[in-house]
Amino acid sequence: DAMVIQNPRYQVTQFGKPVTLSCSQTLNHNVMYWYQQKSSQAPKLLFHYYDKDFNNEADTPDNFQSRRPNTSFCFLDIRSPGLGDAAMYLCATSRDDYGGETQYFGPGTRLLVL
Amino acid sequence: EDQVTQSPEALRLQEGESSSLNCSYTVSGLRGLFWYRQDPGKGPEFLFTLYSAGEEKEKERLKATLTKKESFLHITAPKPEDSATYLCAVRGTAGNKLTFGGGTRVLVKP
Image (cartoon, rainbow over all chains, first blue to last red):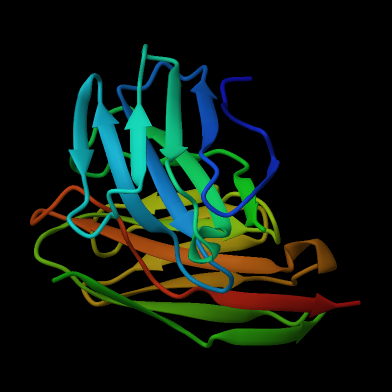
């Protein structure tokens, strides 16, 4: 089945220690998104890639970076995690980034910062 | 700015007790309204996309409807496995990002 895969499902890191979360997709979609979701809140968009074009949300902290080396993979780098960065990180994909294109989400990576 | 409000915040149902969830929205030029189901500790699972007022879509015990101001997710004869948080999101012409509501947590008791 075509799908969005996130690894790892759970990640524990130390305060200030860089961490990388990964996402892969077999849907061959052009767009890949990263969301942050804190407990009992709606997902918050951090940034997205349309193909190789990077689109950052205005309120995304500089501490968060992303890479998309090819169509299938996208990475979220947190350069110096703080306690406030503990959250579920969701990767999503869509065929295109306009109109009524549906976004399909992966299972998420739960990040814990000690 | 696009806005989405979901009500109620939480809903407790007995198995078989049908109910409806509301998603009220304001958006500049609706491109799509999306319903997702999210289980604890998991990513949102896509349910429906609605594009224009009057549109309806069904899947098993779920039926989504759309008007110019709101969408309803009807759950008919729910089962315990329908317990989840249901998220509504919209996308308008002003931008290309999804705006989510706060979700409705549904608990179906046997």
